[in-house]
Amino acid sequence: MAPRTTGSDQVGENLAERIAALIVDTANNAPRSLQKRLGPSEVGDPCERRLTYKELDWPRAAAEGDPAASIIGTGFHTWMEEAFTRRQSTLPNGRPRYKVEERVTVYDSPIEAAAITGSTDLFDRATGTVWDWKLVGHTSQDNYRRKGPGPQYRVQAHLYGLGQENAGEEVKRVAICFVARYHELRVHVWTEPYNRQIALDALARLDKIRARLTDPTAAASNYSSDWWSQIPTSEQAKCRFCEWFKPGSTDLSVGCPGVQQQSAAPRHGFESLIA
Image 1 (tube, helix red, strand yellow):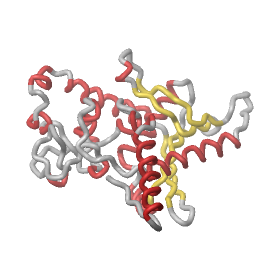
Image 2 (cartoon, one colour):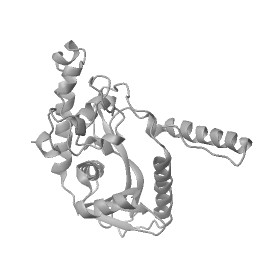
Image 3 (cartoon, rainbow, N blue to C red):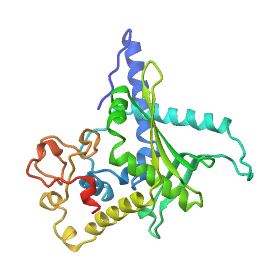
Image 4 (cartoon, rainbow, N blue to C red):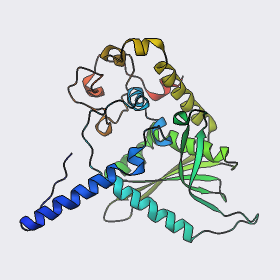
């Protein structure tokens, strides 16, 4: 997606194009954008087909997305990191209360590309709470307030809980803080007790997806469109944010047309995939 640029005159227009190009290039080459292996934020994606594309590092079908939201979100995470670092305190046992932006291992593996690691936004030892910050539009925030965080964010929260547990912490709760990008401050917090089994079920589901990729029939089919058609999507898939979304595609090895255009394709909810 090409950024829209304007200027007060031709010089201004040229400068706007250069700044926009710098922003896009920097965003596309940030470590997060270049990461190829799955992170905790993706494991709970309800679309098994998207996860399979990701695991195979399949050529992207969609054009590069607008990086503005990601850039703003990164800046907000940095701001929150600084805020809690300034408010750091010491517990009676002498340990720091907050663990801020600490990397944890959710799923260890001798194969580096198979390991699941990530940075927890915040862990509060005083309450045993894993926190994750989400900067969203106000419409999205209203939706999360009414319907909850959805399977992907919920799984992410419990995976980070597992990561902190693996690091030796006592995890009691997970919490997702939705802050709306709006002209007034709106904060909504979803929280529930930490449940290790939610994280383990999500990892077991991922193991099944990975096992399919090592099946001899996968390579034998040359990952044809027919092979891809056997991999289910989900009614909960966020197709417009998917790097492999290709509206109207009839060849799944090139791109996926999205669940709205696949009335005959198998569709499964997240719970059925981990049953």
